[in-house]
Image (tube, rainbow, N blue to C red; front, top):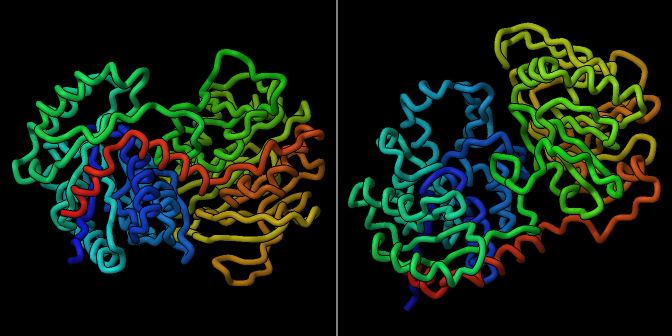
Length: 497
């Protein structure tokens, strides 16, 4: 008799308890077991996004989860994506394309339309895959928003999913996290919770045996695992610079390593561009929020931004303009990606008011380019080569700006294809002395040829330590870590109904 397999939902007691990483691990575990599994998150809020093979935008976490599940990422896996562009508002991406800009009040005032479209995606995925691993959002027990929350238990009801609750012991109060969550949600939803995962445990887990018994008594369901805090497994984070990232360190960079500073904008996006650099033990990456002397760094990178004009204003207010001019004058290498590339130029023109009031913002003036922001977002998986060196490159583009050169220099890349369609185009800019560069290609450092070329600009004797970041291997390492500490027999009984 064939066993009916239920969908599995992973919900959190709070934001940033590790839901995304648990879903990623389970997707790889189930895939390794021969299950045709896919991820789903009805609504994600993140400025860290990716482009599907068919040229649509979804949260980077769902791209990662699809890769872990060994399936092709699609817009149905994250039908609603909110990309914060102000403190109170977001761009709404629906089924991979920009649909609207909404304040938080406007968005939560009527979530019905977004829920309806999200559940269309859920139905399509349910018809395509044997099992879905569903990620919730934030806390699943935000009672003031409960009737408007379609990402957590409402999705579980529609998908007929069993629920695992994830709590983060590292932040403290794990008993209250779990007991409080279960005590306030309605009985109908409480019945769906079949187990608890205690995440980010430090130390000897046997010392928490009493804690496990207390949780099981409070919750009335089993603790499915106490997951030790891990380091050294490189998995892209969902929507914040990873916890292990070095931010505004007091100590100078290690002179024995290649030292790279990444400017930490308020609206930083796609910081996963630097994961491959952070994974190399002879490279040191510092995220810098507060302006400081850059002379001990060999390169400075300006990353992507969801509000380029706002982050430019912030940079000038913080004193970053002067620090970057000094760094450039002293021969430092500066690299901009997407929004960071636009900031390096002379001007950003926003005639439609896409990032605030319509108008123009003065750029850093380090390269002779100007950018005009346009309403239609450009979404591409792109390939090409370095214009001078003929090195192969590839990446993905997510931008609303059109950038043109207005002075001496040359494009950085010749683009050969976008979304698998041949093009004869150029991208980016490279100064005559090769010290200041910019590109719209996110993920450009993932390519070994370009990465080595760039790092040899900084350290001529650089030799790649290994083959770079093997993401598929990292998913297997993550799955092994979780499988060692999870009661997988119990989890299989839960999903087998």
